Length: 380
Ligand SMILES: [Zn+2]
Ligand SMILES: [Zn+2]
Image (tube, rainbow, N blue to C red; front, side, top):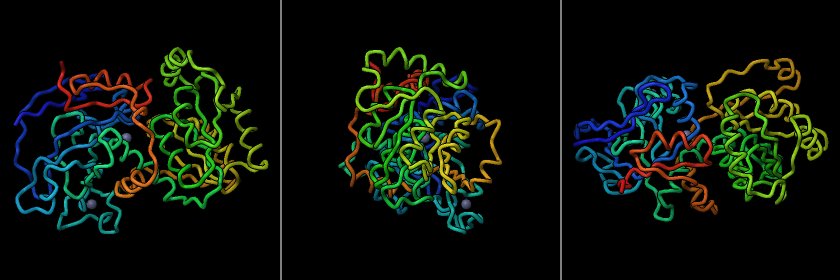
């Protein structure tokens, strides 16, 4: 069997490799044939070298696949031929190991001490024709969810995890900093769970996409705090010049001070109970602290790998803020959520590339709201 995969050799350098792949599966494994895989901010951070992981690596972890094979008489054999989404933490539980590590024993398989992470740490990802995955991570995708939307299940689960850790009662104000790929799903989850979402972004295109779930939308000018965002912002600026600025209920603010005044205005001067940092710019944690009310929660969703300087520990202590990291969530819950709630249409995917052009796809994702690698599309 020949597999074709996009291999990141070193930051910025992806090559296509065609290599034989053994069809023999280990106990607890399944062979998946990838249909499509979306590019995520984590892929961009890994590709840039900001998020250091062992290389070479086949990236890609938000995908829909068909189960091509499993060992005979294994429990997942019933899934052969079906479309699935796949959890990315390859743990003792996912492989149904007889001897489990301490984390898995405690019911925390996402923190498995022996885990690999598909497309991120020591396990090849989905920018490939085939992939092996532990059977325990497979979740059948209902027919009502098309494959394009299915690639949103993994990041939606990660977005929903925020509110598993800090449950919403309904009606509270949640500020979402950054309306990009993940921020948009966080806004969607919070909005559908009954919160009033103040979505903050710099990009008109991103603010447009978040409109259905936001109570208020606030736009900061395109003057990024560091060079990393500036490339994206500059190109975004050019792209969005056809839009009517500040139209459609978007409030423009000049700077972080004005943004803070806006949030205080809408919270009787107290601040927001939950501020989600999803900009990919670590430094925005400092802004998040200033928007949250005392004893509020700062939900950290960025995995940009960029360190934060000048962190205000005094403010964090005095205001008794809670800093909540969170990563992956339950795919099962995300599938149920997507089946129950009206989801955005396919307009969320703004660019599509064949597998052979994975490098271009990742590069495009720096500015495009969401890029899909269509693995089963054949180059004309
Ligand atoms: Zn992701
Ligand atoms: Zn484990």
